[in-house]
Image (spheres, rainbow, N blue to C red):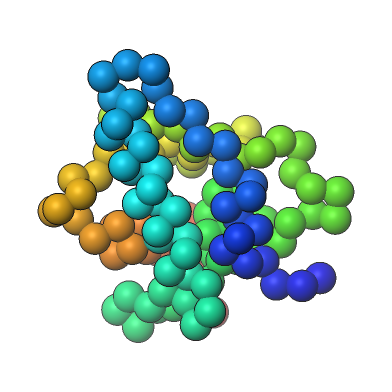
Length: 122
């Protein structure tokens, strides 16, 4: 199997922006999440000596570091809420809003992924 790419992951995402006052903040956070995914391509995103590649992001969201030969049973829903959650069985990630000027999305999401139970530094 060829390695998972950032483009592969982007193609698996289904952003579910709310239709209310939160829509713009949802979109901004979604763009920041895509920026984080893009940062993992090539040599990967390295923070504090730990390098993340696209397969690490896929593992965090799905529990699998590879895309199954027949694909996943659905796209990965990216939702927005007050706290972050990842449900690997339901293929659903809930992101909280980031403050655009206050937080570096690559640093923020890398930190969240490294601190998750799905991460194993090799």
